[in-house]
Image (cartoon, rainbow, N blue to C red; front, side, top):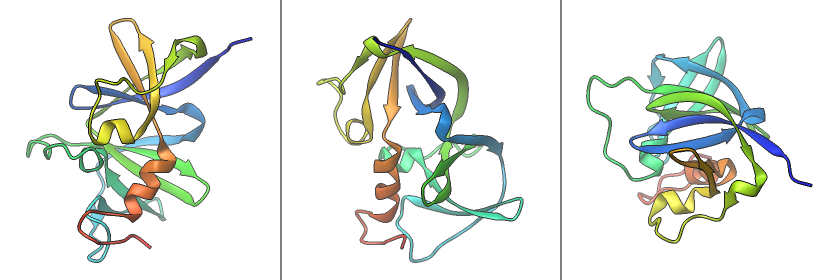
Length: 152
């Protein structure tokens, strides 16, 4: 018996990613970030969200993509994890999408680079793919960086 699974869709450039709905606490805009000098280059800083301090990582940095244009304001996709909340900075957030488990495929062979490492697989949608983010891998990614910095 197959079922459906709900994902919050978010976009980074032309890529459509999905985070399981159960992991998403909220979406927030703006907010000043406090820089962490010894953190991984993938950690953008800390966000004070109503008194809760949240580590922020930019999904663009995780994917080794170019920085956003100066006027483009990212959104915080606040996730609940076993270690507390974290924020993923994304270009925009879409709708909640219910996908059929039968439409799941492993990462496409044609996908290369960091995106392939950070997804569990893809779901076929009308007009495209929803790339299911491996949020556990992203948390590990926040702790490690090619520049030798570390989060912990």
